[in-house]
Amino acid sequence: MRPRLSRLGLRFAAMAAACVLVAGLPSNAGSEQPAPPDPGNLTGKLLVAAPSMDDPNFTKTVIFMVEHNEHGALGIVINRVLGKAPAAEVLKGLGVDAKGASGQMRVFLGGPVEPLLAFVVHSTDYADADTRTIADGIAVTGDAQILEAISHGKGPHNSLLALGYAGWGPGQLESEMAHDAWYVAPADPEIVFGNDIDGKWKRALAVSGVDL
Image (cartoon, rainbow, N blue to C red; front, top):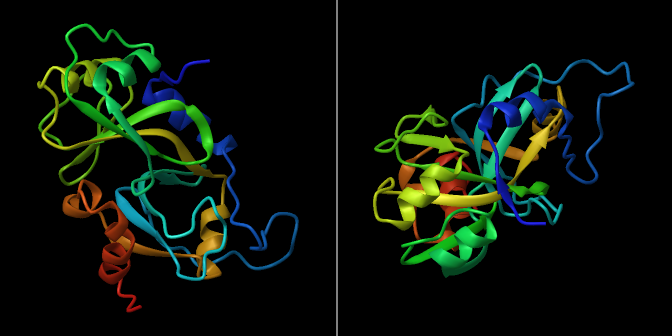
């Protein structure tokens, strides 16, 4: 089966069912423990894995938070690269018309949930009917049109193609944060779209106020 692009609205509606728990962290489900502290709305911010994070899905990850509300949370990992290939090959793999495509595309692993779904995190100088602006200077699009535009040199100035996402059910992310699994940082476009992939985690951690 080929990866496929999907409309963002459908992904947001389904996110409550996407429950990704950090290994070893207790959950409040079915217990009488008090509710964890409210970290505030994290939409449009960076979620930064704590140095103690030992879940291989999230060790040293930086996640751009696309949605966070009472139904759960959804984010896209922005510092794990799956590989780089000619744009034509990437588009064909995603079932997108590759005619006239040129250049290379780097593909990120956006998270362990539904890895056959593709998202593009990008600068706000591009928008189509499926684009949603999430933070200052940062938007997300989930349709094929943006990839065609990028491959023809007509897309956004900055972009990041990711497969899959990270998801949490109601209260799960709050519980993980109460156990110091994550830190929060502003979504700086220089971090989100920076070419120093290996350095994103340390930069985001520093911005969050943690000194390694």
